[in-house]
Image 1 (cartoon, rainbow, N blue to C red):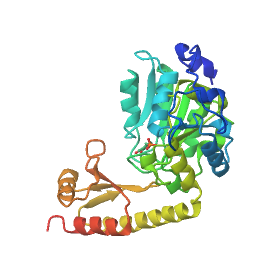
Image 2 (image 1 turned 60 degrees about the vertical axis):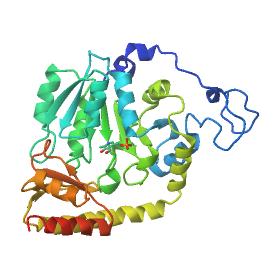
Image 3 (image 1 turned 180 degrees about the horizontal axis):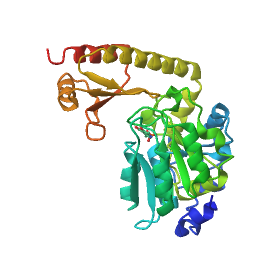
Length: 343
Ligand SMILES: Cc1ncc(COP(=O)(O)O)c(C=O)c1O
């Protein structure tokens, strides 16, 4: 594994970051005349740029030191920051395993970074011999591994992931947005072992705070330093930090929601697998199912006409619809609608 500094863009290594007023004084008590705020009101002050209270709460739950946590305005901001730290526009490349989450590719395009795509095999697993052949000739800066993967739903084989982390000379980012719906262990406990590992999770899925836009990156302090160096100073609003803290206090309630979602997912699989339109339901470790149907485009339109919106993934996995698990009532509506298709 190469030295982290040698992987970081030279202009980022030498960058002098913006120093905000609240960088220099972190206490909440005092007479604040440093940031040109309005002195009146309850939301008049800039938020904590390092989200210390929220990180302390996350640290306890995840068993990760606060110094190894970075918070982004959603995982999508963290993905973009990774490009800006490690990839020189027009020069560097990244490796993805397709089909996968679309933002890796969008962020790559925004940053003018080449995307090398290796298709997952028929079980949606990484073809390890293709990877080693490719890495013998190409030198991507970053490898994105989404596990559980979107849109396929399955986890990528953990042994394969670890082989890649060990053997790759660049950065491996594991996107665990859906990990709380899976029985598989998170890779976050390996950030001390592998210096080139970034593990990403989010408040948007199992935790139920998609509106609040908070993504988490767990990694070593050297990489955290670069995230902090280039992020917008106040990237997580005070309102959002408080909303996230509040939900972390209701952990029991959230666990029950997750159990219900998993139960509903299994019920949907059982019901949909019996339908005539269903050709295959792929194994899932997430809060959605990928279903191969007789004709994805027409079933998608049929559902839209009934005000039921699923994701048509026909363009990435032939004749497949990705269906997010809803409430029991919503799932029943979908099941009823699918049962009436073609009648
Ligand atoms: C795999 C994956 N990663 C990240 C995200 C985005 O997460 P966030 O809402 O934290 O930006 C999504 C959203 O669908 C996703 O599917």
